Amino acid sequence: MGRRAGHKERAEETGMILAELAAGIPIIVLFLTFLMVAVLWSRQNYERQIADAELRQEMQSAFARIVESALLSDRIEPHFQGGYEMQRNIETGRMQTRYWVDAGRLVVNYASFPMTGSFAGAGVHISELSIEQEDAVPLYHIRMTGESVVTGHTYTLETRVYLKGQGDVR
Image (cartoon, rainbow, N blue to C red; front, side, top):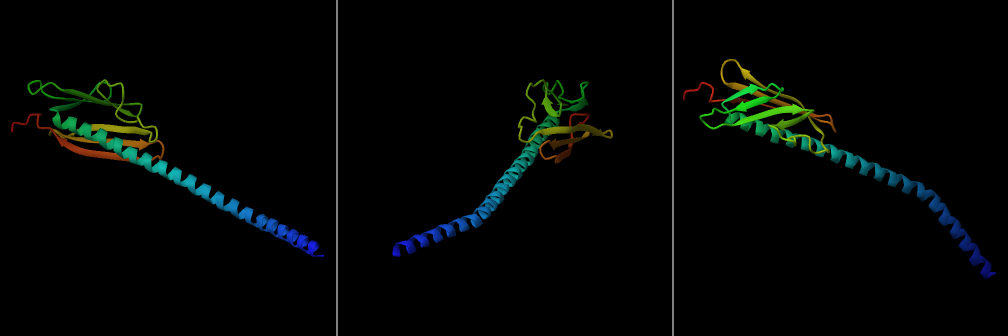
């Protein structure tokens, strides 16, 4: 009789373990599903943050180069291909820099590699590059707008540059 009682207790324990597993597995699956959603959401948020940071970085570095070229120039003129040409006087040293937007990418001179849009994670698309002279003074308003194809966010930089070379006798 002792032998049968021990066997009956083990059978009851096995039934209890199966009941606990039947109740615990859905909870574990629910927890793992929540964990997977959290990881995927975090990765997507990380990629969006990187894309926005890359948009700002590419725009700022390209804009700084344009402004630096403008400050070194004696005059800025629209180029016949739709961009802008920054020139120095021949007496002070010949320099000619051209900037234009080609398929949403900023290109300098005849470079085969554009200044912006090289990082696929951001997808920077330059939507506007304008350099306009204000009134008759050699004051130029420079404006550049770009958009991240990944996030859809836009970033605009603008400044005014005074060129001393245009009729300035100081």
